[in-house]
Every structure is written in C-alpha cells, then in structure tokens.
Length: 405
Ligand SMILES: *Cc1c(COP(=O)(O)O)cnc(C)c1O
Image: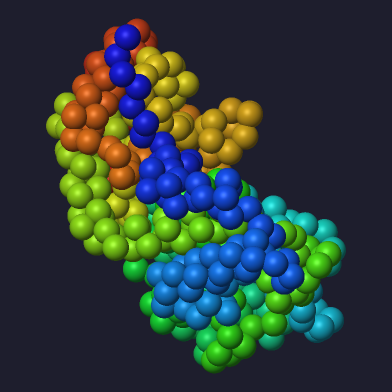
C-alpha cells in the first residue's frame, strides 16, 4: 500500500516534536495549579505561564498583559465578538462581518442577530477579497465592531486587514481579526494589522489542540470586553478556568518556532505549492483555481476539476489526505459556502479540492500527489459521458477555465 500523504494543513497540523518536549515536564513533574499561591508547585506553574505569555506576546509584538489564553480560536472569536458587543451599552448595535468567515465567527453573529443585534455580512469579489468601498458603505453610527479574518481556511485568500483596520480606527469602530490561519505564516503584529482584537489557534501552527488566545489591545485604544466565561477570575477576569499550563507552554514554543522560520518557510511552501499547480495545469485541462493566487497563504491551493465528482476524486486518492469543497463544513454534501460566495458554480464547488501544504511536506509528496490526481481525474473523466460530449464540443461549457484574479 502506498504511504499516506498528509496534505490538509489548514484543517490541523501535526505537533512539532520540540513542542511536545517542551510540554512534557508540565504534565508529569511541574503539574501545579498556576493559581496556587501557597507552595512551590503553584509558583513553578505560574512562572512557566508567565514566561510563555511573554514569549507568545513577543511573537506578535504585543505586551504579555494583552494575552488571554482560551481553548482555541473558536473561543477567542466568541470572546472577542460577544465580549465587545456585551461591553457596549448602546441601544442599537451593529456588527459587520464577511460571508467567507469561519463558522466560529458566522455562528456567533447569527446568535447575536437572534438577540437583536443588526448584522451585515458583506460579500466578496470573485477573487475572494473584500471590497473596501463596500465596507465603508456598510458602516453606520451604530456599528460597534467589524470582524474580518486575516487568511481564509478554505481558499487561503489574505484580506487587506491593515487597510480594513485603518478604516475602523478612523471611525472609532473596533476591529477584530480571526488570524487562526495566518499566525506564524504571515507577518502579524498590532501595527501590521491595525486590529484591536486578534484570535489565534495553537493546532494550526504545530502546537497542541485545545489552546489558543485572544489578543486584546491595551493602548491606543484600550479595549474593554465583557467576560463570557466566569468562575474564579483567571486571565484578569476575562476567562475563568484553571490554566492548562502544558498547553500554554506548548503554544509559546510553537509560536517561537513558527516565527523564527516564518519567512524561509513561506518561500519553501509557496515553491512547493506553485510546483503542484504547475504540474496540474500542464497535465490537465478544465481545472480552475479558486481564489486569487496573488494574496494567498503560501501553503494553500484550492482547485476545481471540471467533469469529475469531488467525492469520487477523494476516494480515488485514498492515501492522500486532502479536503473537498463539499465535505469540509458539515456532514452534509452542501457545496462550500466560501466557494459559493466567490461565485463558483455548484458543480465546480463539489469538485473542489483543498491542498494544505506545511512544515513536513516534501517535494516527493507533491509530485506523488500530482501524479495520483492526474491519474484519478483522467480515469474519472474517461467514465463521464459529459466529458466525452465536451471533448466533441457538444456539452455547454460556460465556465471560465482560468485562475480567478
Ligand atoms: C481552525 C480555525 C478556527 C477554529 O480554531 P480552533 O482553535 O480549532 O477552535 C477558527 N477560524 C479559522 C480561520 C480557523 O482556520
């Protein structure tokens, strides 16, 4: 049986063994509760948390006091958005977000909408990018918060968050960005993002699952949030619960590793990614890249293969772990709402494959994947009457088979 290839790094990443080693003593020896003030077990844990908090904050050019550890980016998004809305005592409240956000933002907004908050979900262009003018036009006197992700988890498209943040700053509106996919991969600081609130996830950057953070700006301006989890007053009252010391140590180690290799790794990953794209475009016709290639995570490629079924293609690729344009949001086979939002027709959304390339991906794996895809697509098209008709010019073909720009 051929060796399995993991190419789903936007879903999760394997933990770096160095991260695991850094965490190990905090499971076994230094197991104290960081809130225990009366003995050395507690002091040791508290010391590790403080050091990790500083290391993690410095990876973002932030202050340690601006970090609130959470269980992941989902919780960070909940705290940022609900926390900001709850802390605002205006009668009419309005939140602006984007149709291609992660469910951890969209579902939070829907919950707020059901409680009377007005929500605007902006569309994006066919390249996946938010149009700044439509953002400007959506802002009203009631707007409390704008939430726009940094990099998209399906199509890897990178939003112009610095410009978005500048627009919000000028109007004194809070700006939150879900940076789960971009942290450790793209430059990200307070000043590069102009954000007030930044969500981060450990398991997307070779850290452990079950840990993340919300960064909350303390100066210019100082952001106030209402806690969403109470019971002990940990994290300056913003997120109660005994601190998971090993996970926090792991997150800091993962952050440090990612930042130190960020730029060289980005170059390597985009090289691998471009090689994969080059092979697929030279060996297959009727394929389409979803989302702009110009503003994109280095390790992401999302491609629709005309005249094949995504699920059938995935089955044919048994030993390559990728995700499809239909299965990744739920158990149902509804086409991805992200692909729909950029105008991909249903049939092509169903045949979309997301390739997530990361730290342990090799050129051999890329070539192997390309070979298997080309084979599989060829085989499936050979069985398709529509493909045969298209070859003879008999099938309607209104799709533009060029990368979106
Ligand atoms: C993975 C992901 C999340 C959820 O993060 P968890 O840490 O798993 O809760 C949120 N937003 C984006 C963009 C993601 O990619």
